[in-house]
Each structure stands twice: as C-alpha cells, then as structure tokens.
Image 1: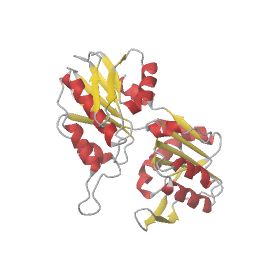
Image 2: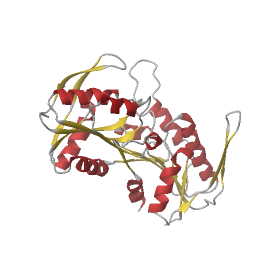
Image 3: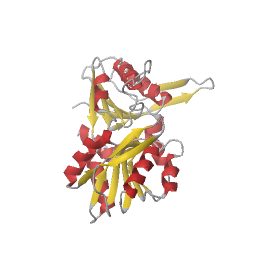
Image 4: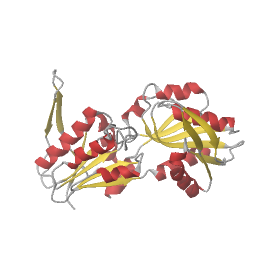
Amino acid sequence: MPHRILFATQRYQYLKDRLLTLVPEWEEGKLDIRDFPDGEHYHRINSNVTNKEVILLGGTIDDKETLELFDIAHGCIQEGACAVNIVIPFFGYSTMERAVKSGEIVKAKTRAILFSTLPPTTSGNKILMLDLHVDGITYYFENSIRPVHLYGKDLVKEAALEIAGDRPFVLASTDAGRAKWVESLANDLHVSAAFVFKKRLSGEETHITAISADVQDKLVIIYDDMIRTGGSLINAAEAYLQAGASEIAVITTHGIFAGNGFNKIKQSGIIKRVICTDTHPNALTIKDEMLTIKSVDKLIADYFN
C-alpha cells in the first residue's frame, strides 16, 4: 500500500485536523498559500508527494474554493503523486444538475467536467462526494476520473435515534423528491415515513397541498440532504404541525444556512432541534444549543481503511 498524505484547501483545514487525529499514520501535507492584492492566489506544495497516494479535502462551496481544489490536485499530480483522491464533502451547484429552461447552464456538469480534465496518475484518480442531491451527478465525470458517492446513512440514523430517545417518531422529508431516500432510512429504523406534496408557485415560493402519512401527536424528524435558506424546511415543518405533529426536529447532511438561514429556522419557533454534519464550513460558525454538529471524519476514514 502506498504512503498516504493528506492535504486540504483553506476552508477545510478543520476536517483535515480531525482526520489526522483519527488516522495518525497519514502524513500531513504542507502547503504555502498566499493571496495577492490583485486577487490572484499563490500555491506551493511543500511536502514530497512523489509516489505517494494523495487525499485532498475541499468542498466546491464557491468558485474560489473550487479552483483552489483543482489547482492543488493538479499540482500534486505534477509533482509525481501515484494517485489523487479528491474528497468533496459538499458538492456545490448540485441542485443545478439539469436545465429546466432553455439556455440554462448545468453547472453540476461543468464542475464535473473541470475535474475530469485532471491528468491521469499511475494508480488512478477518484472524486469522493457525500450525500449528493442527485445520484446522477456521478455520471457527469469523464476520462480517467472515478466518482464515488459516499452515503451518510448511518450518521442520519444515529442522529434520529439520539433525538428520539425512547419516543416513537415519524421520519419525514420536505417534499416528494426525497421520499425514496427517507423511506429507505425509515425502513432501516422500523418507523413510518412521511412526505409532503408541494405545488411550486414561483422560483422561491411553494404551496403544500397534502401529507402522505398520519403524524397526529407524533414526533416528526425531518431529513433533507441540505438546508440552504431554510424556507422549504420551515414550510414543511409548519405543514406537519398543522397535521397534528407534537414536535418537529431536523437532520441534514449539509448545513449551508445561507442568508441568515439558521436564524430564520430558530426564529420560526416551530423546530426544536437541528443536527447537521461538518461537510460545509458555514455550520461551524454557528454557536447555538439548538444546533448539534456531527463530523463525517469517520465516514471518510473508513472508506480508505
């Protein structure tokens, strides 16, 4: 087995530190990164990566982070790495996986094509992604890149049991689009699944028309792969409450909480607890007893061990 060395982009150093604690035999990769006044960025790989298997952490959370991830990966290949494994905890633009209107750019695909241009290595290159919004994104990668979709199912199940304790509960989704995934989780947990039917009124507004299951006097735990502004989540939670739910809690893999999203959820007063993972650095900036953050470090480490 080749020697493994772990690098991370600037925004994902926290996850690199957790992984190095969990897997101390991995070497810590050293980078020199500087920003210039004109907006350009300098990167230098200070560690020897020749004939080593590189594990590189970084989410495509914005365009700067995406290019930094690509540049470091390319640099490691250029310096002689025998394999590069790019771990993308949160794959940005995953909701733009298809064109709805004529002329729309499918950015989930263009990002995949970008990483597909990386030169091959002797042992091959992989892209590891966690709880993608759409499974089909893996098919956008081309050439010698091997995409791997890791599922955080065990993390979600553990979180649901932590919230519920000894209480019975219903596992729910924010819409019918996630129904199969939630139903699979509910079956594993031996609980009922529920989802809402929504009618889209505009690009930002939806109306809930029905709920698929009986939630009367029950704890409802909503799972969604990501929370951005929290609008759809709050609408779904309100619908479950109106249908008779006794309490609402939420689990999400990707806590993005854009546009003051977490405060909107808290101020709604209808959601008692939120559990998310550390796939997105935004979640780590929130210090609130209502929010619990679980790490995906073990999920990533287990893949390589």
